[in-house]
Length: 94
Image 1 (spheres, rainbow, N blue to C red):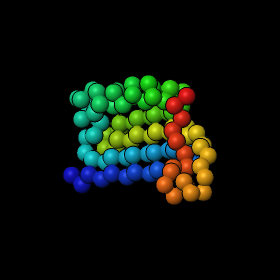
Image 2: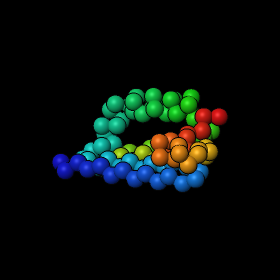
Image 3: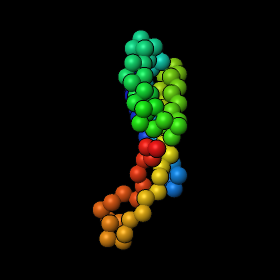
C-alpha cells in the first residue's frame, strides 16, 4: 500500500553518486524470496566494468529498500564547440 520511490543524483568533479530508496510494505521479505538475483547480476557487471572504481551498498529493511552507488569519474577535455554536445565527464573504466 502506498509505495513510493525517491532518487537522488549528485555529480561532482570526482564522483557520480546515486541513492535510490523504494518504500513499500514488506520489501525485505520480497528481496529475501527472490534471493536478489537481479542485484547480484548488477554487482557482477559493476565489478567487471568498474573494478575498484565504484561502491555499491544495498540495504533491505522492513518497509524500505535502499541502494547507494558511487562511481568515480574521469575528467575529459573538450573544446568550447563540443561543450554543448559532449559530456563533461565519462565514467572511468581503467
